Image (cartoon, rainbow, N blue to C red):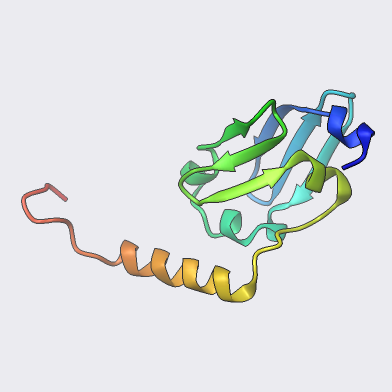
Length: 108
């Protein structure tokens, strides 16, 4: 990691229907397409809006989607590094879980 990247932190995050917009501590704003991150594209608005900073604002974590994006990768223009097989397994599991009937004794 270069020194310049190491010193930059995220200050603000906005998630739209098709983009991530990250304001950085050096005054820049970076906008990247959600299409770079398949888990975010397949998440609901609620899941995409449920995020937290990682470390000293070095990255962003989406617990509902098990997605992490570093500020460094945003600056370098790197999309998700997840393999197609890993994403396929995640998506299949997600789809299977969403089709399960409610647990017995719980209201729908």
